[in-house]
Every structure is written in structure tokens, then in C-alpha cells.
Length: 558
Image (tube, rainbow, N blue to C red; front, side):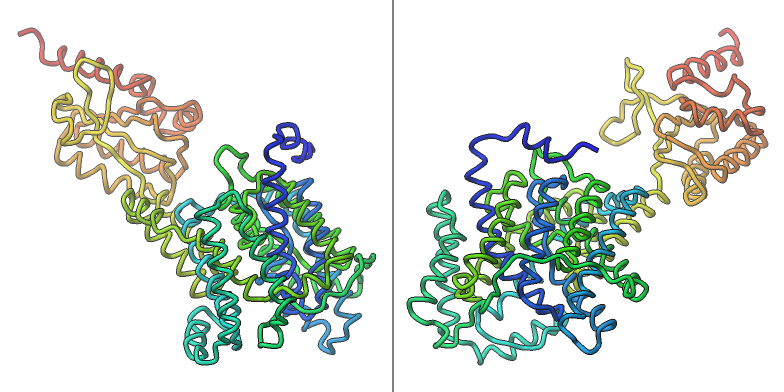
């Protein structure tokens, strides 16, 4: 297998290096504190989060196919990991938790690699663009609400989106004014620099200013929370426990599904124009090895994070060099910068995340979808509501389910067009009020079904075509199959029954422009024997010519 890294290295441009450096450092300012926080959510020491921001990030930079995807751990993965660790290590013993977490990450990696071998990356194709639009907007809103309490310096037990919103309003009187001032100042720096000095790395300036203010003015003494103490040192080797595999594999399966779906959704959401599309099966390998090797070096389950990928992309990342820079920053933090990073106010982090998450919410995209097709707009809203009301994991599942339902709906409701011929040409197109001049031929009904014909839509095709036949009373019905890639047995049986019914009424069925596979199926059936070569025609011009010739013979000379 060719390393994806070789593809982007071959075309790497000198001007990208500055952008990747700035994006990688900016993303590190978000990833490093969040990774530590997520480790505590899972019940693990904060340094485990840093290990997870290091090893999987490097492996993904080498093997991943998404240029901006930032891989460490996420809120959902941390919550799922914590729930699984609590089941197998109810005592909370630190050493046992570390072993269990490493084993869990190892299992998740193995399952993702197995999924790649089985070519299961196709599941990523089940998320449509409108659904992805709704998913991104929902994630953006959830992330913003999650960060607002840090901006205000208030605390409450986290729940669903609605519960968090109600709790936020309820706790507003507890707002720390100093923390709010820090947060507003950071927002002003970020927004101001982005607008008036776009070439200046605004997030880096904000992070540096936050750390400097925290150190100079001892902001902790005024109630401003900071990242806090970060232990120093590189990760050590951690062998997985075979005894825990039987207990952990069901949870690992769910985490693997979450890791992949969240990663591929983020990779697709932030794919830049002109960049290669993320390759699902290679993504499985990249994230799988990231988890597997990360588990061997004391990491927790990892995957692509939406908010950190948003920061990475919007801060200017062009290639996976940005990911390597983020990983290097994690190592530097472990070895050198831990005391300095520990001074960062949480309000600064929240401001960076909020500014770079607002871009996920694109009302104009919803309007564009609504203008084109109302049904797909409803799919986007369903995905948005799924993420907001049910959470990220269930929201992604809702997005996939909505997309699958959309596919099923479209497949079960194929289009059937009545055709006319553009005057003076051999172009046949659906009849419409825009082209009243298109030619039709008395006694010949020309129709074109579109899409695969199978058991779920065969009845629907019949429901559309028989009223047309009843109204036209044609001598011949020419079905143009040029837009039908395949026909399943149930639909073929419907055609056989339809042909018999037409014959009883004194009409003929002609099949036109059958592709080789469909033609072979028809010829193997009784329909092929009944139609013979005479009623299976090459194209519509041939069908019209034959019909006109037969009509002329039947009518005789004037």
C-alpha cells in the first residue's frame, strides 16, 4: 500500500510551511488542554491525554488521507472510554485503569484495521452532503454551548443540550466577572485580528496573551481557572492485558464505530477544494494503527476531533505537516512547556474554540439546500436536531440513518417521464410546459423510468405508468431503459405481467436501449421469448421510425 504521505510530500509548496506551522501550533493550543481534560473525563491522569495527542497524531500524519484532520481524543470517546473503564475497574485503581485504557485502545485499533481488511469503509458513503451540513451545524452549536460556561467561569453538571442550556441560564448570576473579562478580551483579540490583520496568527496571539496575563497578574487569585499542573515525561511502553479482552471487546466495538464515524465525518466536512477526498478504508487503517500503537504507549482511544479539525483547517492547515507540528508541541509540553501551558486560562481556550466553531454553522447552506430541494433541507434539519438533541454519538447515527432513509426513499420512488422529440432532431426529452412544441406520435407512448428497478419500486412504477396508458390508449408503449442500470426479478416479473395485460388490450410493449446486463436478464426470461428481437430496440429514434413505418403500412396508401 502506498503511503498517502508520499502524495502530499511530492507536491508540497514552500509557502505552505508557514501556514502548516501556524495551524499546527494553533491547534496544539486547543488540543493539548482539551486532551488533558478528556483524560480526566475518562478517569485517567492528565498526561494520558497528552500521550494520545502525540502517538496517534504522528501515525495519522503518515498514513491518513485527510489533509486537515486532527487526531487525538474527543469528548464522546472520552465519555465512552470512562464508562467502559468504570465497568472493568470499579475500584478506580490508577494502575489498573491505565492498563485497561491501553488495552481498550489496542482493541479499538485492531477492530478498525479488521474493518479496513473487510472493506467496511463504504459506510462513510451513507452520509449525504445536506446531512453533513446539518451535522456540522449541530456540532458547532453543541461545541459553543459547551465552551460558554468556561467563558463565564461557572460550573454545573453536564447533561443534554437542552439541560445544559437551562442550567447555563440558571447559573448566569454566578458568572465570574474577571473570567468574563478575560474571555471577552480574548474574543476581541481573535475577532479583531481576523478582521483587521488576517495574516497575524490570531489564536497564537490570544493564547500567548492569556498565558502572559495569567502569569503577570496572578489571575488564579481572582478566581480565573487555568489548565493547571501537567506532569512531565514521555510515554512508556504498556502491554495490553489479555485477561481484559473478553470484558472490553463489546465496548471497544462501540468506540471503534464512534471513532471511525466521527473521524470520517470530520474529514469529509473539512476537505478543501482541490484536495483528495478522504479514502474511507485507508482512514480505517490510519486511525486503527493510531489506536493500536497509541495503546502500546499508554494512550486512550483516539479519533478525529471535529472542533480541533475546525481550528486546524481554519487556521490555515494545508497538509498533515500541521498534525506533526501539533504532535511535536505535545512532546514539547511533556518535556519543557508543561509549567507554562498550565497557566493558560480556560476562558482563553474557550474563546479560541468558540471563534473557530461558529464557522461550522452556515445558514446560507441551509437556504441553498431549501432553494433546490425541500426534502433534502428536511434531512439537514433532522441531522442538526439529532446532534443537538441526542448528542454527538446518537446524532451521527441519526445522520447515517437519515441518509439511508433518504437513499431508500429515492430508490423506492423512481422518476418516470413521458417523452417527446425536439423538433428537427433525434433528441428525446421529458415533456414539459417549457417545450410545448416537442413532437409526439399518436398511438405511441414513450416513457423513460430512471434508476434501478427492483422489488421496492416495481409497484410504484406500475402506479405511474398505467394511468398514462389508460389516458393515451396507445397502440405501442416504448419504455426507454437508457437510464436503468439494473433490473431485479420482481421488477422483471412486473414487466412480464404488464406485457400480458397490454396484449389483452391490443397494445404492444417495446423495450428500448437496454444495457447488456439488463438485456441478458430479459432474454433469459419468458419476456425475452415473448418480445423477440422485434420488440427490443436499439434506441428511441429506431423505435419511432419503426412505429411510423408500421402505421403507414397499416393505413395503406392514401
